[in-house]
Image 1 (cartoon, rainbow, N blue to C red):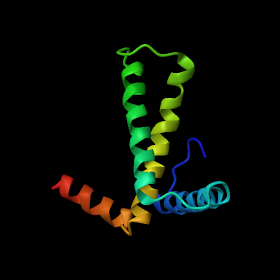
Image 2: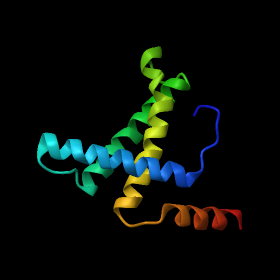
Image 3: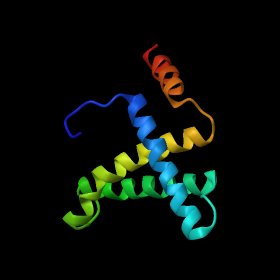
Length: 106
């Protein structure tokens, strides 16, 4: 879908389906799904990696070009994690985002 706009509702639906598939794998390999806390930790880990990759992109941290190529992926992964976390915590992220943006616009 590169170069195409995606509707947030579609992104959310796809994200939920992918997370359901990961839950199946977690049950298969570990006998239980990750907890919300484990999902949050995974998000925070990826967010930390974005910090380091950002420093590298800005020439403030030495890193290989191969590692730096992960920045785009990690940014998208963090958006996915935020959608997953909001869903698991029964937060309507579309509504929450609308309220947040409306408040900033004021």
